[in-house]
Image (cartoon, rainbow, N blue to C red; front, top):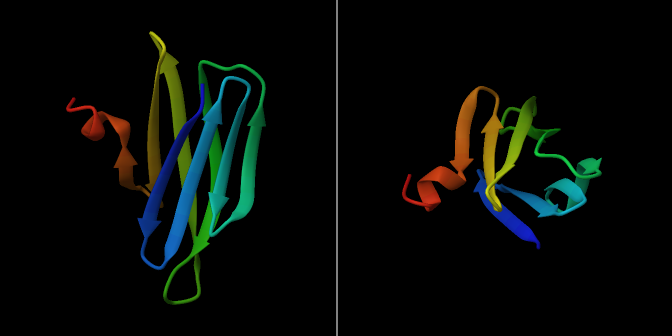
Length: 89
């Protein structure tokens, strides 16, 4: 099973790809983090440059329960995406 989440953040594209044995974080098509193996929860980290030329931290939290994968993406301390909103929860 493969899940792909793509989010536009300012002028950047953040993409998370999740499979049974691998999670990857891409920013503008460049791989920034990868987790290999089977996990019920995992974290991916990366960086994105803001309009002032400074880097902001990206944090992605993935969790699996009852065959459902949930994804939460943060830039800095701000939540920019969650699958809970997409699932109506």
